[in-house]
Length: 443
Image 1 (cartoon, rainbow, N blue to C red):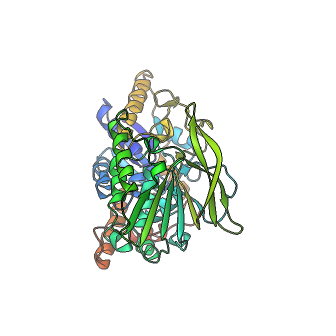
Image 2 (spheres, rainbow, N blue to C red; image 1 turned 30 degrees about the horizontal axis):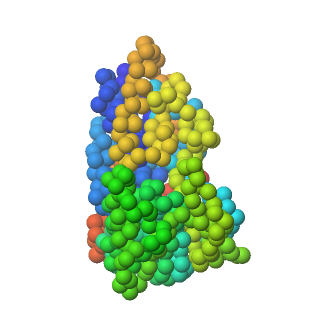
Image 3 (cartoon, rainbow, N blue to C red; image 1 turned 135 degrees about the vertical axis):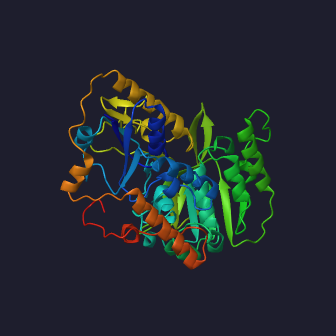
Protein backbone atom coordinates (compact mmCIF):
# COMPACT_ATOMS: atom_id res chain seq x y z
CA UNK A 1 0.00 0.00 0.00
CA UNK A 2 1.75 3.21 -1.16
CA UNK A 3 2.03 6.19 1.12
CA UNK A 4 -0.34 8.91 -0.11
CA UNK A 5 0.57 12.55 0.62
CA UNK A 6 -1.05 15.81 -0.47
CA UNK A 7 1.03 18.98 -0.72
CA UNK A 8 -0.94 22.23 -0.80
CA UNK A 9 1.09 24.77 -2.76
CA UNK A 10 3.32 24.22 -5.80
CA UNK A 11 5.97 26.83 -5.12
CA UNK A 12 9.55 25.94 -4.17
CA UNK A 13 8.59 24.82 -0.64
CA UNK A 14 5.91 22.48 -1.95
CA UNK A 15 7.99 20.99 -4.74
CA UNK A 16 11.05 20.60 -2.52
CA UNK A 17 8.78 18.75 -0.09
CA UNK A 18 7.70 16.41 -2.88
CA UNK A 19 11.34 15.82 -3.81
CA UNK A 20 12.29 15.07 -0.20
CA UNK A 21 9.45 12.58 0.09
CA UNK A 22 10.59 10.68 -3.00
CA UNK A 23 14.15 10.53 -1.66
CA UNK A 24 13.47 9.79 2.02
CA UNK A 25 10.46 7.48 1.90
CA UNK A 26 11.49 3.85 2.27
CA UNK A 27 8.30 2.67 0.58
CA UNK A 28 6.29 3.52 -2.55
CA UNK A 29 4.77 6.98 -2.37
CA UNK A 30 2.04 8.81 -4.30
CA UNK A 31 2.25 12.60 -4.09
CA UNK A 32 -0.39 15.08 -5.25
CA UNK A 33 0.76 18.70 -5.45
CA UNK A 34 -2.29 20.98 -5.33
CA UNK A 35 -2.39 24.66 -6.23
CA UNK A 36 -5.23 27.14 -6.51
CA UNK A 37 -3.60 28.55 -9.66
CA UNK A 38 -3.49 26.67 -12.98
CA UNK A 39 0.30 27.11 -13.06
CA UNK A 40 3.07 25.70 -10.83
CA UNK A 41 6.25 27.20 -9.33
CA UNK A 42 4.67 29.85 -7.09
CA UNK A 43 7.13 32.62 -6.22
CA UNK A 44 9.54 31.55 -8.96
CA UNK A 45 6.88 32.36 -11.57
CA UNK A 46 5.04 35.19 -9.85
CA UNK A 47 7.58 36.75 -7.49
CA UNK A 48 11.03 36.71 -9.07
CA UNK A 49 11.64 39.85 -11.12
CA UNK A 50 11.36 39.22 -14.88
CA UNK A 51 14.88 40.50 -15.57
CA UNK A 52 16.39 38.01 -13.10
CA UNK A 53 16.47 35.15 -15.57
CA UNK A 54 19.15 33.20 -13.71
CA UNK A 55 16.93 32.93 -10.62
CA UNK A 56 13.88 32.10 -12.71
CA UNK A 57 15.84 29.19 -14.19
CA UNK A 58 15.19 27.36 -10.89
CA UNK A 59 11.91 26.40 -12.55
CA UNK A 60 13.90 23.92 -14.64
CA UNK A 61 14.93 22.09 -11.47
CA UNK A 62 11.40 22.17 -10.05
CA UNK A 63 10.06 20.82 -13.34
CA UNK A 64 12.07 17.63 -12.94
CA UNK A 65 10.37 16.95 -9.61
CA UNK A 66 6.88 17.43 -11.07
CA UNK A 67 7.81 14.97 -13.84
CA UNK A 68 8.68 12.16 -11.43
CA UNK A 69 6.33 9.17 -11.82
CA UNK A 70 5.24 9.40 -8.19
CA UNK A 71 4.32 13.10 -8.36
CA UNK A 72 1.13 14.59 -9.80
CA UNK A 73 0.30 18.29 -10.31
CA UNK A 74 -3.32 19.34 -9.76
CA UNK A 75 -3.80 23.01 -10.60
CA UNK A 76 -6.92 25.08 -10.10
CA UNK A 77 -7.84 23.34 -6.83
CA UNK A 78 -8.33 25.71 -3.90
CA UNK A 79 -8.36 24.76 -0.24
CA UNK A 80 -11.52 26.10 1.39
CA UNK A 81 -13.38 26.40 -1.90
CA UNK A 82 -12.94 23.13 -3.77
CA UNK A 83 -11.70 20.94 -0.92
CA UNK A 84 -11.53 21.18 2.86
CA UNK A 85 -8.99 20.07 5.44
CA UNK A 86 -11.34 17.22 6.34
CA UNK A 87 -11.54 16.16 2.68
CA UNK A 88 -7.76 15.95 2.42
CA UNK A 89 -7.49 14.06 5.71
CA UNK A 90 -9.89 11.45 4.31
CA UNK A 91 -7.94 11.08 1.07
CA UNK A 92 -4.31 11.04 2.24
CA UNK A 93 -2.04 9.63 4.92
CA UNK A 94 -0.58 13.10 5.43
CA UNK A 95 -1.06 16.66 4.20
CA UNK A 96 1.69 19.31 3.99
CA UNK A 97 0.73 22.98 3.69
CA UNK A 98 3.21 25.08 1.69
CA UNK A 99 1.31 28.19 0.62
CA UNK A 100 4.02 30.73 1.46
CA UNK A 101 3.57 34.36 2.51
CA UNK A 102 1.18 36.06 0.14
CA UNK A 103 0.53 39.58 1.45
CA UNK A 104 2.53 42.63 2.54
CA UNK A 105 2.70 43.91 6.08
CA UNK A 106 0.85 47.18 6.56
CA UNK A 107 2.44 50.41 7.71
CA UNK A 108 -0.36 51.38 10.09
CA UNK A 109 -0.26 55.09 9.22
CA UNK A 110 -2.93 57.61 8.11
CA UNK A 111 -3.64 57.63 4.39
CA UNK A 112 -2.50 54.06 3.82
CA UNK A 113 -5.77 53.15 2.09
CA UNK A 114 -5.81 56.08 -0.34
CA UNK A 115 -5.89 55.16 -4.04
CA UNK A 116 -2.28 55.07 -5.17
CA UNK A 117 -1.05 53.46 -1.94
CA UNK A 118 -0.22 49.92 -2.99
CA UNK A 119 1.25 46.78 -1.45
CA UNK A 120 4.47 45.84 -3.23
CA UNK A 121 3.17 42.28 -3.60
CA UNK A 122 0.29 43.57 -5.74
CA UNK A 123 2.71 45.48 -7.96
CA UNK A 124 5.06 42.49 -8.23
CA UNK A 125 2.11 40.25 -9.09
CA UNK A 126 1.11 42.77 -11.76
CA UNK A 127 4.39 42.87 -13.63
CA UNK A 128 4.82 39.11 -13.17
CA UNK A 129 1.44 38.43 -14.80
CA UNK A 130 -0.34 36.90 -11.79
CA UNK A 131 -3.93 36.06 -12.81
CA UNK A 132 -5.32 37.74 -9.67
CA UNK A 133 -4.03 41.18 -10.77
CA UNK A 134 -5.34 42.35 -14.18
CA UNK A 135 -3.08 44.53 -16.38
CA UNK A 136 -5.45 47.49 -16.03
CA UNK A 137 -4.78 47.68 -12.27
CA UNK A 138 -1.80 49.99 -12.86
CA UNK A 139 -1.52 52.93 -15.25
CA UNK A 140 1.79 54.43 -14.02
CA UNK A 141 0.59 57.98 -14.52
CA UNK A 142 2.42 59.35 -11.44
CA UNK A 143 5.67 61.20 -12.08
CA UNK A 144 6.93 60.65 -8.52
CA UNK A 145 6.87 57.23 -6.83
CA UNK A 146 7.94 56.38 -3.29
CA UNK A 147 8.98 52.82 -2.43
CA UNK A 148 9.04 52.22 1.31
CA UNK A 149 11.57 49.54 2.20
CA UNK A 150 15.19 48.67 1.45
CA UNK A 151 15.05 44.92 0.89
CA UNK A 152 15.45 42.92 -2.30
CA UNK A 153 11.74 43.19 -3.15
CA UNK A 154 11.92 46.99 -2.92
CA UNK A 155 15.01 46.94 -5.15
CA UNK A 156 13.19 44.73 -7.68
CA UNK A 157 10.21 47.10 -7.78
CA UNK A 158 12.46 50.13 -8.23
CA UNK A 159 14.48 48.43 -10.95
CA UNK A 160 11.39 47.46 -12.97
CA UNK A 161 10.00 51.00 -12.69
CA UNK A 162 13.37 52.51 -13.63
CA UNK A 163 13.97 50.38 -16.71
CA UNK A 164 12.65 51.26 -20.14
CA UNK A 165 10.12 49.00 -21.81
CA UNK A 166 12.76 48.16 -24.41
CA UNK A 167 15.03 46.77 -21.69
CA UNK A 168 12.22 44.50 -20.48
CA UNK A 169 11.09 43.40 -23.93
CA UNK A 170 13.14 40.19 -23.93
CA UNK A 171 11.68 39.08 -20.57
CA UNK A 172 8.45 37.20 -19.87
CA UNK A 173 6.52 40.33 -18.81
CA UNK A 174 2.98 40.06 -20.26
CA UNK A 175 2.52 42.11 -23.42
CA UNK A 176 -0.33 44.10 -21.86
CA UNK A 177 1.93 45.02 -18.93
CA UNK A 178 4.86 45.89 -21.20
CA UNK A 179 2.64 48.30 -23.13
CA UNK A 180 1.69 50.07 -19.91
CA UNK A 181 5.33 50.22 -18.84
CA UNK A 182 6.12 51.83 -22.19
CA UNK A 183 3.64 54.62 -21.39
CA UNK A 184 4.95 55.13 -17.83
CA UNK A 185 5.10 58.75 -16.66
CA UNK A 186 7.44 57.90 -13.78
CA UNK A 187 10.41 60.25 -13.63
CA UNK A 188 11.57 60.26 -9.99
CA UNK A 189 11.78 57.30 -7.63
CA UNK A 190 12.41 57.48 -3.89
CA UNK A 191 13.50 54.32 -2.04
CA UNK A 192 13.17 54.91 1.70
CA UNK A 193 14.59 53.05 4.70
CA UNK A 194 13.83 53.65 8.39
CA UNK A 195 17.39 52.78 9.40
CA UNK A 196 20.81 53.36 7.91
CA UNK A 197 22.60 51.67 4.99
CA UNK A 198 24.29 49.17 7.31
CA UNK A 199 20.85 47.83 8.29
CA UNK A 200 19.43 47.48 4.77
CA UNK A 201 18.32 44.00 3.72
CA UNK A 202 19.24 44.05 0.06
CA UNK A 203 22.14 41.99 -1.24
CA UNK A 204 25.23 43.54 -2.78
CA UNK A 205 24.45 42.02 -6.18
CA UNK A 206 20.95 43.53 -6.23
CA UNK A 207 22.26 46.91 -5.10
CA UNK A 208 24.93 47.06 -7.78
CA UNK A 209 22.29 46.38 -10.42
CA UNK A 210 20.67 49.70 -9.53
CA UNK A 211 23.94 51.48 -10.23
CA UNK A 212 24.14 49.88 -13.67
CA UNK A 213 20.70 50.99 -14.88
CA UNK A 214 20.88 52.49 -18.38
CA UNK A 215 17.70 54.53 -17.99
CA UNK A 216 18.11 55.96 -14.49
CA UNK A 217 20.54 58.12 -12.51
CA UNK A 218 21.07 57.08 -8.88
CA UNK A 219 21.93 59.32 -5.95
CA UNK A 220 22.50 59.06 -2.19
CA UNK A 221 22.86 61.96 0.26
CA UNK A 222 26.17 62.31 2.12
CA UNK A 223 24.49 62.66 5.50
CA UNK A 224 22.51 59.44 4.99
CA UNK A 225 25.23 57.25 3.49
CA UNK A 226 26.46 55.54 6.65
CA UNK A 227 29.61 55.62 8.74
CA UNK A 228 32.87 56.48 7.01
CA UNK A 229 34.69 53.72 8.91
CA UNK A 230 33.34 50.41 7.62
CA UNK A 231 36.11 48.15 8.91
CA UNK A 232 33.96 46.65 11.69
CA UNK A 233 31.12 45.72 9.35
CA UNK A 234 30.61 42.31 7.74
CA UNK A 235 31.84 41.85 4.20
CA UNK A 236 28.31 41.98 2.75
CA UNK A 237 27.30 45.10 4.69
CA UNK A 238 30.65 46.78 4.05
CA UNK A 239 30.15 46.25 0.33
CA UNK A 240 26.67 47.78 0.47
CA UNK A 241 27.85 50.86 2.33
CA UNK A 242 30.82 51.36 0.01
CA UNK A 243 28.57 51.21 -3.07
CA UNK A 244 26.08 53.63 -1.55
CA UNK A 245 28.82 56.07 -0.57
CA UNK A 246 30.20 55.98 -4.11
CA UNK A 247 26.80 57.14 -5.36
CA UNK A 248 27.06 60.27 -3.22
CA UNK A 249 29.65 61.69 -5.61
CA UNK A 250 28.28 60.27 -8.84
CA UNK A 251 27.43 63.03 -11.32
CA UNK A 252 24.06 62.96 -13.04
CA UNK A 253 24.24 61.62 -16.59
CA UNK A 254 20.91 63.17 -17.56
CA UNK A 255 19.10 59.84 -17.86
CA UNK A 256 15.29 59.91 -18.24
CA UNK A 257 14.65 58.74 -14.65
CA UNK A 258 16.22 59.40 -11.27
CA UNK A 259 16.38 57.31 -8.12
CA UNK A 260 17.01 58.89 -4.72
CA UNK A 261 17.99 56.27 -2.14
CA UNK A 262 17.08 57.65 1.30
CA UNK A 263 17.86 56.43 4.82
CA UNK A 264 16.98 57.37 8.41
CA UNK A 265 13.41 58.28 7.48
CA UNK A 266 10.14 56.68 8.48
CA UNK A 267 6.73 57.30 6.91
CA UNK A 268 4.24 58.90 9.29
CA UNK A 269 1.43 59.80 6.88
CA UNK A 270 0.46 59.31 3.25
CA UNK A 271 -0.97 62.62 2.11
CA UNK A 272 -3.85 63.29 -0.24
CA UNK A 273 -7.60 63.84 -0.48
CA UNK A 274 -8.93 61.60 -3.23
CA UNK A 275 -5.65 59.84 -3.98
CA UNK A 276 -2.00 59.85 -2.95
CA UNK A 277 -0.32 63.23 -3.40
CA UNK A 278 2.67 63.04 -1.08
CA UNK A 279 4.45 61.27 1.74
CA UNK A 280 5.30 62.77 5.12
CA UNK A 281 8.52 61.41 6.64
CA UNK A 282 10.19 61.78 10.00
CA UNK A 283 13.94 61.76 10.53
CA UNK A 284 15.02 58.83 12.73
CA UNK A 285 17.91 57.79 14.94
CA UNK A 286 18.79 54.62 16.80
CA UNK A 287 18.31 54.75 20.56
CA UNK A 288 19.16 51.58 22.50
CA UNK A 289 18.89 49.63 19.26
CA UNK A 290 15.40 50.93 18.43
CA UNK A 291 14.32 53.35 15.73
CA UNK A 292 13.17 56.61 17.30
CA UNK A 293 11.71 59.70 15.66
CA UNK A 294 13.48 63.04 16.08
CA UNK A 295 10.51 65.33 15.46
CA UNK A 296 12.12 66.58 12.25
CA UNK A 297 9.78 66.11 9.27
CA UNK A 298 9.86 66.47 5.52
CA UNK A 299 7.31 65.93 2.76
CA UNK A 300 8.15 64.49 -0.63
CA UNK A 301 5.81 64.56 -3.64
CA UNK A 302 4.45 61.16 -4.62
CA UNK A 303 1.55 60.09 -6.78
CA UNK A 304 2.08 56.45 -5.84
CA UNK A 305 3.44 54.81 -2.69
CA UNK A 306 4.55 51.18 -2.79
CA UNK A 307 4.80 49.49 0.60
CA UNK A 308 7.58 46.89 0.83
CA UNK A 309 8.21 46.34 4.53
CA UNK A 310 7.91 42.55 4.62
CA UNK A 311 5.66 39.66 3.67
CA UNK A 312 3.32 37.70 5.88
CA UNK A 313 1.28 34.53 5.51
CA UNK A 314 -2.51 34.39 5.65
CA UNK A 315 -4.59 31.79 7.51
CA UNK A 316 -5.77 28.71 5.64
CA UNK A 317 -9.36 27.55 6.25
CA UNK A 318 -9.32 24.85 8.93
CA UNK A 319 -5.56 25.10 9.66
CA UNK A 320 -4.25 26.48 12.99
CA UNK A 321 -2.66 29.92 12.71
CA UNK A 322 -0.67 32.13 15.08
CA UNK A 323 -1.65 35.78 14.51
CA UNK A 324 1.42 37.00 16.41
CA UNK A 325 4.04 35.25 14.28
CA UNK A 326 1.77 34.98 11.20
CA UNK A 327 2.77 31.33 10.82
CA UNK A 328 1.23 27.92 11.42
CA UNK A 329 2.34 26.69 14.87
CA UNK A 330 4.48 23.59 14.41
CA UNK A 331 7.14 21.36 15.88
CA UNK A 332 9.78 20.68 13.22
CA UNK A 333 6.98 20.87 10.65
CA UNK A 334 4.35 18.88 12.58
CA UNK A 335 1.05 20.75 13.09
CA UNK A 336 -1.07 17.88 14.35
CA UNK A 337 -1.55 14.21 13.51
CA UNK A 338 -1.43 13.93 9.73
CA UNK A 339 -0.94 17.67 9.18
CA UNK A 340 2.41 19.33 8.43
CA UNK A 341 3.79 22.61 7.16
CA UNK A 342 6.88 23.78 5.23
CA UNK A 343 8.31 27.00 3.83
CA UNK A 344 7.42 30.54 4.84
CA UNK A 345 4.11 29.38 6.28
CA UNK A 346 6.20 27.32 8.71
CA UNK A 347 9.06 29.66 9.62
CA UNK A 348 8.07 33.13 8.39
CA UNK A 349 9.43 35.02 5.34
CA UNK A 350 13.13 34.38 5.90
CA UNK A 351 15.93 32.99 3.76
CA UNK A 352 16.20 32.62 0.00
CA UNK A 353 14.48 30.19 -2.37
CA UNK A 354 17.06 27.50 -1.66
CA UNK A 355 16.40 27.72 2.09
CA UNK A 356 13.11 25.96 1.44
CA UNK A 357 14.97 22.79 0.46
CA UNK A 358 16.46 22.08 3.90
CA UNK A 359 13.27 23.32 5.54
CA UNK A 360 11.18 20.85 3.51
CA UNK A 361 13.61 18.02 4.28
CA UNK A 362 13.14 18.63 8.01
CA UNK A 363 9.35 18.49 7.69
CA UNK A 364 9.53 15.28 5.68
CA UNK A 365 11.77 13.65 8.29
CA UNK A 366 9.17 14.51 10.92
CA UNK A 367 6.33 13.23 8.75
CA UNK A 368 7.99 9.89 7.99
CA UNK A 369 9.02 9.37 11.63
CA UNK A 370 5.41 9.93 12.68
CA UNK A 371 4.12 7.40 10.17
CA UNK A 372 6.73 4.87 11.23
CA UNK A 373 5.42 5.23 14.77
CA UNK A 374 1.92 4.36 13.54
CA UNK A 375 2.24 0.70 12.46
CA UNK A 376 -0.65 -0.92 10.64
CA UNK A 377 -2.10 2.32 9.33
CA UNK A 378 -5.35 1.98 7.42
CA UNK A 379 -5.64 3.07 3.82
CA UNK A 380 -7.28 6.49 3.33
CA UNK A 381 -11.06 6.12 3.07
CA UNK A 382 -11.50 8.27 -0.06
CA UNK A 383 -9.74 9.32 -3.23
CA UNK A 384 -9.44 12.96 -4.22
CA UNK A 385 -10.24 12.25 -7.88
CA UNK A 386 -13.67 10.88 -6.96
CA UNK A 387 -14.38 13.77 -4.61
CA UNK A 388 -13.46 16.42 -7.21
CA UNK A 389 -15.42 14.68 -9.94
CA UNK A 390 -18.52 14.67 -7.73
CA UNK A 391 -18.12 18.44 -7.32
CA UNK A 392 -17.49 19.12 -11.03
CA UNK A 393 -13.96 20.32 -10.27
CA UNK A 394 -11.58 19.47 -13.10
CA UNK A 395 -7.95 20.07 -12.08
CA UNK A 396 -5.36 21.40 -14.50
CA UNK A 397 -2.99 18.53 -15.19
CA UNK A 398 0.75 18.78 -15.68
CA UNK A 399 0.32 18.11 -19.41
CA UNK A 400 -2.18 20.95 -19.63
CA UNK A 401 0.32 23.21 -17.86
CA UNK A 402 2.86 22.27 -20.53
CA UNK A 403 0.32 23.41 -23.13
CA UNK A 404 0.07 26.78 -21.37
CA UNK A 405 3.85 27.02 -21.36
CA UNK A 406 3.99 26.15 -25.06
CA UNK A 407 1.42 28.83 -25.84
CA UNK A 408 3.56 31.38 -23.98
CA UNK A 409 6.59 30.37 -26.05
CA UNK A 410 4.56 30.72 -29.25
CA UNK A 411 3.35 34.15 -28.17
CA UNK A 412 6.92 35.30 -27.50
CA UNK A 413 7.98 34.10 -30.96
CA UNK A 414 5.09 35.91 -32.63
CA UNK A 415 6.02 39.16 -30.84
CA UNK A 416 9.76 38.77 -31.33
CA UNK A 417 10.24 38.80 -27.56
CA UNK A 418 12.56 36.33 -25.84
CA UNK A 419 11.63 32.74 -24.93
CA UNK A 420 8.28 33.22 -23.18
CA UNK A 421 5.65 35.91 -22.74
CA UNK A 422 3.16 35.18 -19.99
CA UNK A 423 -0.50 34.77 -20.76
CA UNK A 424 -2.73 37.03 -18.70
CA UNK A 425 -5.68 35.64 -16.78
CA UNK A 426 -7.19 32.23 -16.26
CA UNK A 427 -9.38 32.43 -19.36
CA UNK A 428 -6.36 32.69 -21.67
CA UNK A 429 -4.59 29.90 -19.78
CA UNK A 430 -7.56 27.57 -19.97
CA UNK A 431 -7.98 28.30 -23.67
CA UNK A 432 -4.30 27.44 -24.21
CA UNK A 433 -4.79 23.97 -22.78
CA UNK A 434 -7.97 23.31 -24.71
CA UNK A 435 -10.59 23.73 -22.04
CA UNK A 436 -13.07 26.31 -20.86
CA UNK A 437 -12.99 27.61 -17.29
CA UNK A 438 -15.92 26.55 -15.16
CA UNK A 439 -17.88 29.30 -13.38
CA UNK A 440 -17.28 29.65 -9.66
CA UNK A 441 -15.18 31.46 -7.06
CA UNK A 442 -12.08 29.34 -7.62
CA UNK A 443 -11.81 30.52 -11.18
